[in-house]
Structures are given as structure tokens and as C-alpha cells.
Length: 140
Image (cartoon, rainbow, N blue to C red):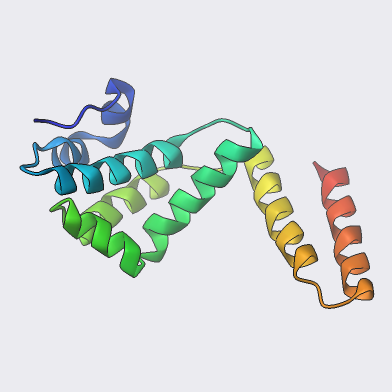
């Protein structure tokens, strides 16, 4: 059974990657890994400026770019060469098809600052980070 994907996603990804991610898989586990890849690609191409979608986009982007063991396992589980997937993804980034808007970049910075704030060791460190957050919000 072939993988169902939005036609807009397939058009966006191009022929080679679209053919690879929609190739029929023989068992449920392979289809699950294939679905994880498709979801990550859908998240990565999202153009929404909403916070939650931006976080998903950034996490997916990092997943493809960092080439982690998890990424490798998912690709091999879907019977797709991770080097191929990653190189096709990076082509989309290099061609400007996958990019982050100013608002998305602000959300990503905010999340990073918030994590630092939550992990701060003392009140003074939190105060400095809170000022950075306020300064970042003024820029946005």
C-alpha cells in the first residue's frame, strides 16, 4: 500500500524524494517509520508563524540537519537511505524552499531564552535572562 501524502507536499519535495517517501512498504513497522518521515517533512515546510507550529518546524529542521542516530534509525526503518533524505532536504534549504520567517526566528529565540531561564541557577542569572527576553520581545 503506497503512503498517502498531500499533493502539495509531494510537489514541494520534488520527484526523487517524493517517489522515495511514497514507495509502498511491506509491513506495518516500515509504514510507521515512513509516516514519521513524512510528518517531519510536513513540519519542516510549514510556513505558519504560530508558536507551536514554529517549534515543530525547528525541531524537524534540526532533526534532518543534525543527522542524529534517531534520524538514521527512522530512515533505515522506512528502508530509505538517510544520506539521500538528508541531502535532498539540504537542497531544499539551500534553494530557499525551506526557510524561517522573522517571526519564526523570534519564537525560536524565545524558546531558547525561556529554557535558559528555567535552568538558571540563581535569581541574578534569571534576571539577566528575563531582560534578554524583554529586549527580544521589543525587537519583534
